[in-house]
Image 1 (cartoon, one colour):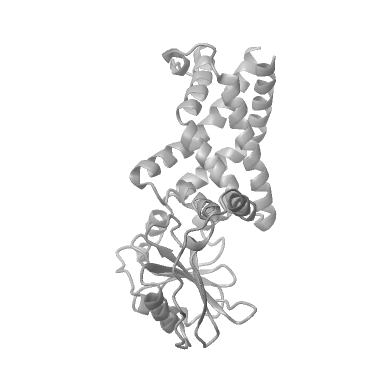
Image 2 (spheres, one colour):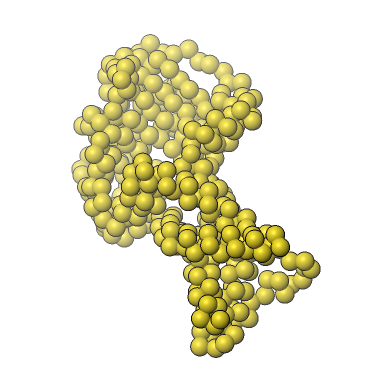
Length: 345
């Protein structure tokens, strides 16, 4: 009786979430290749020589608001996002290669849909709720499927043409088997995607569970003043030579301070989670090494890299790609099976 109840919950949740899941899985899978898609659409971003930190700093000084990414091997350009969300791309000589206003191309639409359902902060809240419901959908599906007797046949698929009567069995078997075989990447994608919608709750919760922190040596701050980004980045390289600057905030804080994020060698997060803070036209005033944070907080910073396959090499990238494709296949086969079964009855 309880299996039947789980089945009903799985069916109606699946029908409710089907369209959302297909679109989110489609955009997320395509965004795994965001850089390649941008280079395909904008040829001027191809074959660029990676600019130096000094060249990037010169460009940053042109802006007074927004944030900017340091050049990387997979993104060999200077990328600045201004306060209005417009993205500017420059080469090492400081020449502007491209301007992408928000919603100015289909890649931008995909990003905003995947992150916020095109609804800004409201969309983020809705995404969080839908993500939690999708986890319930997976749990009820596994419980409903769980076989009483195990054999290889529980995962077999007998293919039939859509015109054949047996095609309804093919849909059910394909839905069942693909979900079970790829349960690990599917679950990781759904858990990490939902956790990204609740970053504060996830990080604080894990910090309480794992409050221990690694002992990190504190180095005295240099008293050298920094009037521009070149000087701030020079200080960062000398103060933390083992960490790499990844992102700078061009908008000063309410106290008039400037921040940058850095990544250490063992860190998963591609943009780093260590911070250096500089006084306006002044010296380094604060350094927050992520390794000095609780183990729970450090664990929470692994959520985003797992979701976007920034770690794990080709193996996890392929697993994430297949997980995204299956997340599109599951609602399609599930709804199709429900519809064919309804017509049959």
